[in-house]
Length: 510
Picture (cartoon, rainbow, N blue to C red):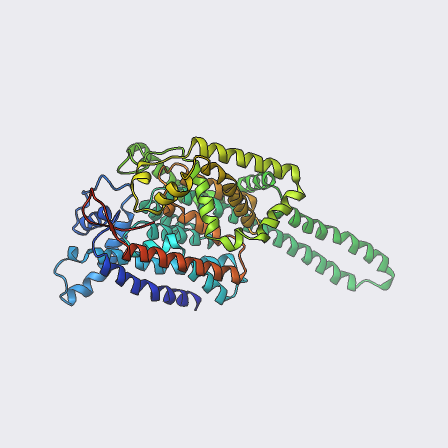
């Protein structure tokens, strides 16, 4: 029932807002001027045509063709269209993302219920609906961009891996990479999470088997002892004491092997040993992911770059500051959790518990952040020249307001990352948190352009695994998301402007 409620609620805003957007902005805008004509070429069957300005693979266009093919019989029967290619209008192509947004909301709900089985249906529905309102995901639901399709494919892959359907998960991994090539990083991350869950399940099953064997032995000995005379009571007590030893040993083994109570190095060692012990099972289950990675590596070697077109404008660059921007944006979009006195008290308490180690961690993090801001903060030509994007104003009005501003923001970046780590380790293993950080870094650091929509997938992995159970915090997030969405949609639709050097209407966009 929950997934149906989520889908209906999302449809209630997707349909009317899509109608409004397409009525006011009927023509392709911004990156749509590349994506829409390319998809229309595919609708005509011209698969050899390719716009050299497009940087992403054609996965979204294939999804659109499948979607349009499902619509064409009915439209042709009603004599609304004479050919298949005529249906591939900007409006219809945009509705591809509208449909995917509904599917994505259902996937979010399914992942929430899987990760938090004790959560009741109403709270799961509330969280799924609010996450579907996440501004950087919500806005591009109404345009023909790759972001919604990319998130949907990645979440579908993740859900299937959580349910141990690894072959189907790898197929959605292929789809996600065909939509956006950087998703190869998230496919590897999902595979790593699958390995962690695989070894954990085998550990739990082994412990249960050991406990059942011990209980069977105790039951058999108890039945035997009932036939013994009262003269052997002392002997029976001695034997019962001896039988308690394996039970205590099993309990201690279970506790000591619990990953949440151990250190990072201990977790890594345990995972390596268990993975080696289960190497053949892991190879059988996760080899499809490895084959996808090998195929992707071969493509990069053949193509000479990870991007398809506009290689000069999207060359891989050491943009370490991008990781800092992401932490602050993610913390802001979860402000009821991170920017509170309670969260500050949690971080302060951890500092007092181990002052030397925490001081060292903060010192190293601040040093790395200062170096990243000073040496690896990139001002991409698109960023400083295009005033249609909000990062343009944040860059000029905040980061570049004064030479010292970018350094003054470093403690805030560092606090945001520590707060994110603090939230994740409450419910996840330390090795999971490390894998998440490395995946985020591998995705964001090579990107020279500051695009907040690049943050969507790492943000969803972060918030889905954060231990946010307070309904008040979720309601505050919902209010924040609604306010931001109303503002960005109003600015996009009703505050157009013009450039002197270029004809046409310009609009504000993420």
